[in-house]
Length: 516
Image (tube, rainbow, N blue to C red; front, side):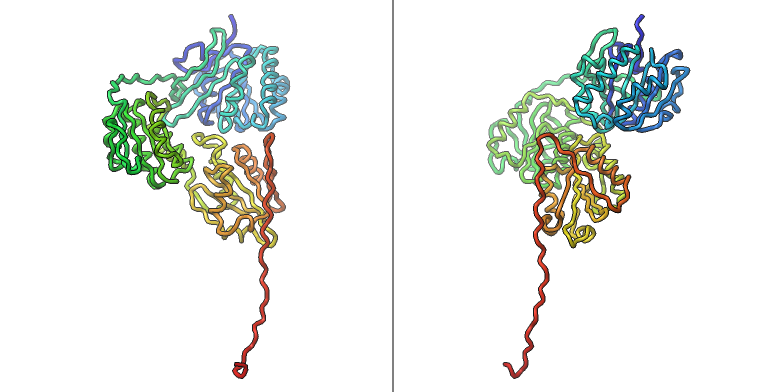
């Protein structure tokens, strides 16, 4: 009988539960605590005579096994792996020296950033090398990654089905977990494209099925309910349109809708929170058939606000750039749609996800670094779109502390600090092409006149690398690392500093009364 190992997830069928030997399986989790719980469950579900080993990077193996209260192998060798490329490259050689791997289940728990230093070609070569080694030794390796970088890693590995035997993800959706299987191969067959709901418990993960929702008649599918300002003073476009004097009245009428289209008006940024609550309540109450659209009437939305409204259940956001003449065609595009995204029941979690930092202004070096590390590891914020880190070097004769007095932070999440005559500014939810505009709003004087050089980091791993450099080195003599440039990227030279005017002495003539 062919040897196999189990994931231990209760009520999951064998096609997605078992791992064959030899085999290489990869599972990415959004959160570290979810990955640790899964590793603990995999170990505890193996028979006592199973030959296994646990390797941990970025944490102690004891964290996984200390709380293991049931089952598992009688002997479990534990190893720690440094978070470095060379350690990853020599993993198979180290395992050969440290234990006899033949016939074992090898479990590797590591942050996803461990593989981020590898370009796709180097990553594929590493996977192919590990797969060949596993075949020679007749053992199985399950890699459980976690944290930022999992999205890019999953996308890069999705085409490696000839080398990997399994690839899946454990997504955290705030009030439930979703297990997404790209492909999974074992002696019972091959499965692909599966999405399952999981529940965590005291003894690990188990399968959970949503209760089927009763079907509803969609007699109002062609009705459009809109706030009056959406049409900019124009009358209703047809007999299917109904206009309301406020978003509140529109939301109240939408509580009776089944598949109608509701169009809310957004005139200023102060409305975003109230509008998000109205949309969230309607989506949770009326289900997937109702269409919820927001029309921005003036410049009001940051992209984090757009993420919030979409996460609360909006089907579409029409930007203020869209003229009224194109609104009917946009509404036509959402007809017949069924809302497919999951909307968490607790809207407070959504607010925390889009506005995780309740800080702004000047911080000390330690607090600044802790805030950015916490922000970069937030699982609900979009990867590589959390903000930009800017290092500014003042012009000759100006100190960073003096330039800091000209800096005014208005938005939550915008932070600043000084290190060895460099001014560091983090702009939350700012895209790299918006840096000039954002800095112009923050500083009261011309940025080109205050600073001679600047460097910008916008990808999560590059920001984390820079923060760790700040933490590891002493401020004296420190210089920011050059941001890595992508292929074909052209680096624009910094604008030459505007010459600062120098004071000129003026001698005033002395007038006497007899001179008049």
